[in-house]
Length: 259
Image (cartoon, rainbow, N blue to C red; front, side, top):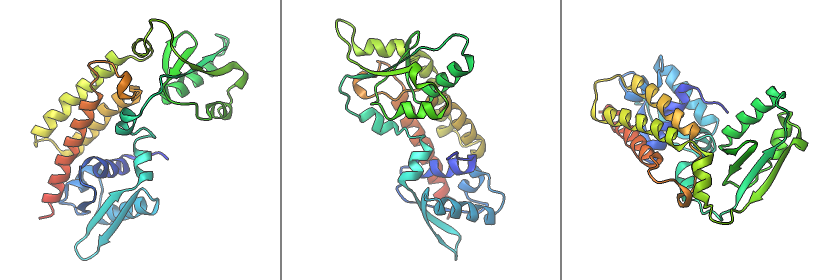
């Protein structure tokens, strides 16, 4: 399920505010109203009801004052994070076994190669070398997924890989993923939200749109590896902490606007 900007904004408030159940008002004076870009209170109410009906939030509305009490469901959390929960991913134990994908496709098979490359990056595989890609995640019916995308199952092989000799798993990490670029994206993000946390001058809707753009650049590139194999100097955890602080501040402002 793809989320539009308004839905994403509401779900992120609930996920990152630091408040398990958030009370806010679908009222033009409320911060959440402006940030989500609702055009009327009726539009806001209908949108929140839709999110609730889809099972993405658990919400109740007090019709007397227009206030909502809402919390994020597990389904909403999964869709918002595109099946990647950073905290859970960093905390996962790892048995030291890589999933290795190798393929044999002609260089003339441009379309097939492009589709496979897109799929691998979405699944956060790392490019080890040539036609070899790795993931710390266990095999999850990926062959069937690729076949559904009209990939030739005979051209793609999945294997388990256990490093031997002097080459440590962190060497594979440094070769397979562009952490220098990922960290630069996180650095840009951290700088922006830290300024946003201190500065109240900008329109919150503009802040959130820019925050989302910067976060997605880093989020899409990050494989979210377990702690045991994260490279030194990795900035993802600090960026996540700043993201929570950013939305917590917006949530506190939204609550104070209720009076």
